[in-house]
Amino acid sequence: MDYEKFVDDLLQKYGNDRSNLIEMAFDIQEKYGYIPKELLKSLCDKMKIFYSEAYSSISFFKDFRFTKPSKIVLSICNGTSCYFNGGKELYQEMEKNKTENIELKTGYCFKCCAQYPVVMINDEILINASFEKIKEKIEKII
Ligand code: FES
Image 1 (cartoon, rainbow, N blue to C red):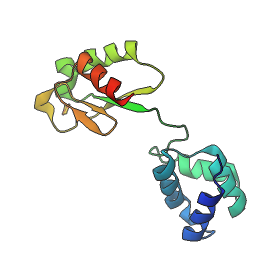
Image 2 (image 1 turned 90 degrees about the vertical axis):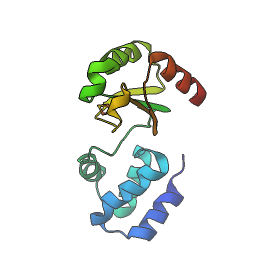
Image 3 (image 1 turned 30 degrees about the vertical axis):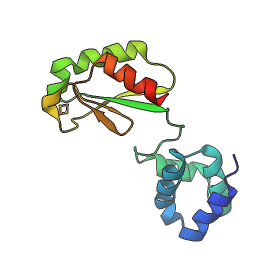
Image 4 (image 1 turned 90 degrees about the horizontal axis):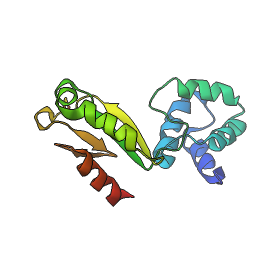
């Protein structure tokens, strides 16, 4: 993929100032969903900074991703209410049945604890979740 135009736009917006690197990383991630290696290399070349320097600054923040996100991010609540009311078993069940386009992870209380177990599929909350409900939602996305 050609990132030249995007990199030029970033430099136009932020200038060639390395102190703006994190703001640039936010823009990159907002546009692509992650920080593509080729894009960051191109940016570093134009800014005349080492890739390793930029990578170490950006990767310090855990919110930045350096791999393309899965099509589906399934986050199962690991808060007390959900964990003890089906969340743990749901996680184990999903772990056994996940495919390569599903990123499975745990979340920490989605603020609807009485409707356990709660999961988040991409940005959508699913209450009273079950394996069947999750499977149905995922099939609609894929
Ligand atoms: S504990 Fe799961 S939503 Fe609060």
